[in-house]
Amino acid sequence: MPEKLPREIYYYKDYYLKFFNKLSPEVQKKINWTLELLLQLDRIPEKFFKHLAGSEGLYEIRIEYGSNHYRVLCFFDDGNIIILVNSFQKQTMKIPKREMKLAEKLKKQYFDEKSK
Image (cartoon, rainbow, N blue to C red):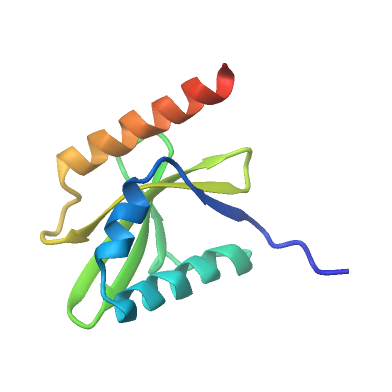
């Protein structure tokens, strides 16, 4: 019988997929490799996964490819389910406010829809 993974990953709506599909195959491969780490490791190193200070339960999945940095914003549902929302290529040291606001909005929509 296959061993149960520590968590599951889903995406909400198509924000993540729209971004992902525009990336080069090499970057897509690196993102998928990073997501696989999240699925399989009990403890995820902060280099790859970090809580966003000033948010209520938002996290960033951190991907580096060459000199480029990518972020996938996400949150937890039912403890071990990670919901991917928006993604972007990081240009500055801080997460852009519009990306944080979008992630917070999508998180609220997700839980509002789930409670119906």
